[in-house]
Every structure is written in C-alpha cells, then in structure tokens.
Length: 175
Image (cartoon, rainbow, N blue to C red):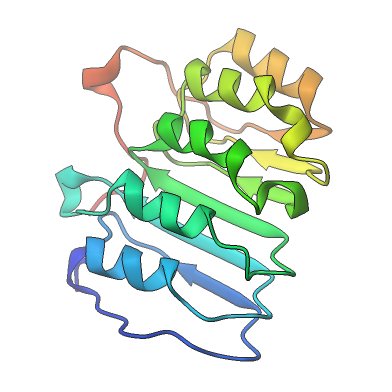
C-alpha cells in the first residue's frame, strides 16, 4: 500500500503516547486526520510526509494545522521527516505553540537546506526546552551545520547530502 492510499479516519485515543506514520508520499486527507487527532497523552510523534513525486498530496497548510495545536500538553518529540517542505516548515515551527515544549525535533531525511536552518537559528528562543535536533540526510551545508551547533545543545547530522540546487533535492526515503 502506498502512503497516499492510507486513510486513518478520526483518530482519538486517551492513552496513546507514541505515533509514527512512515511513508514516501502522505495523502492530504491523512495529513488532515493526523492534524485533527485527539491524543492528549501523545509524547512522541513522527510523520514522514514524503513528496509529490511519490504520490504525496499533503501541503504546508496541513502541517500548519498540526503545528497550531494547543492540546498536546506532553508532546516532547516531534518528527516532521522525509518531507519536501522542510524549509517552509522551519519558517512555521517557531510560531507554533508546540515549539517551547519540544525536547527533540527531528527534521531528518527531507529537503532541509541552510535557509531552513537559518530560520530555526534566528528564532532559537522559541525552542526553550529543545535539547536535540536531528538534521541527518538533509541538504544543509557545513556553515549551516556549524551555526546550528552553536545555537542548539545537540545537533545530530549523519550523512548530509550535497545541495546541487532545488531541482536536485528529494526526500531520502522513496517508494
């Protein structure tokens, strides 16, 4: 089953603490269902959004709806991974009510570049509890990595990919 074919329906669970959705192409309907999920004890959330080249139709507005949530009181780990929207997500993250409570932020496997890193660094005060940020298998350059490491306590950055321009960027996990 392709990620674009997954339909979750209404998501509600009073005790669920960890949710991971891994796909190369997340359907917009699924992204919206995740953004509307009622999961008051969720501590760990990883969503692999993928990209349109792999059947994904989720858009930045769908990510924004998730980031605007105020009812994830114990969410400490947020993974917005394997996405072609990485830099745009980094512009949204500092304005999210969730930013201040996150201990771990995982942006790995996507199209993150120095531009996204700069957006995080410029707004680092929004991430008061952030201990770890993962940018592995992204397109950030050495200068951006040095700046991230100066701004945040722990930066994980395995297997960074060379940035040959926007037409050559793709999510790390496909098909």
